[in-house]
Every structure is written in C-alpha cells, then in structure tokens.
Length: 151
Image (cartoon, rainbow, N blue to C red):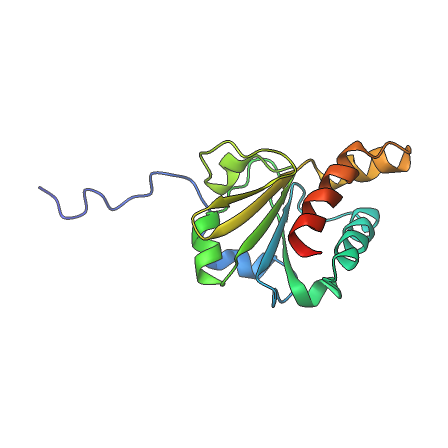
C-alpha cells in the first residue's frame, strides 16, 4: 500500500493561513465578520461600523477581522478560528457550507458550535437596503441578537 494514499485534499478549501492575508482588521476582541462579497461597499462598511459602535466594538478595525467570502470561495472556518484565537463569528449572507459548516444555523440567533459562538444573518446590503426603506425587520432581529450578547 502506498504511503501517500491519503495524501490529497478531500475538500476544496483555501489554506487557513491565506485568510490572514486577505482579511482586514486586528481582531483583538476575537471576532471574525464574514461577508458575501470580495470587498465591502462603502455604505455597507458604514452600516456595519454603526452597528458595531452601538455595541461598543469600535473602532471596528481594532476589534474585528473582516473577511470576504464571495460565492465559489471557501474558507475552513474551524482552522482559521483555532489558529487566530477567534471566539465569535458573524456570517453575513454566506452559506455555512462555504465555511465548512455542515449544520443548519438559525438566522439572527447566536449558536454555539464547539468553542465558537456563531451569528448568521442576511447579507449586509440586504439588511441595509431594507432599513433604508424604513422596514426594520432584519435590522431589528440583528440588533436584538447583538444586544442580548453585548449589552
């Protein structure tokens, strides 16, 4: 039997070390925010900063890591979190399967998965656009979840 029989990758994921090359922020609060685009639009970044400021996580660049995960890109969440001391992950608009999560995560509710606390929500631009139309359902659910955790 060949010694390299299992010497291949079963799942197509980016290397966890490469995540640190593409994310922004210092993450001193152990928080990773994943969004479903390669880059955040200026209005979505402002919206996110206002949300995080309300729960005393500002300046954002000091408290969180920001990582884009557009469709078709995959990141091994468990490895990234373990390697970078991340304890809380917000997932905006990215399907959990793209992050190696094979569990159903409810929207707008913190869920424990091992040592991680995960919050899954709609895409930031979806929440922001709904809020701009004076509809606060998604923004209100997000606020309630964050308020319960931080305030």
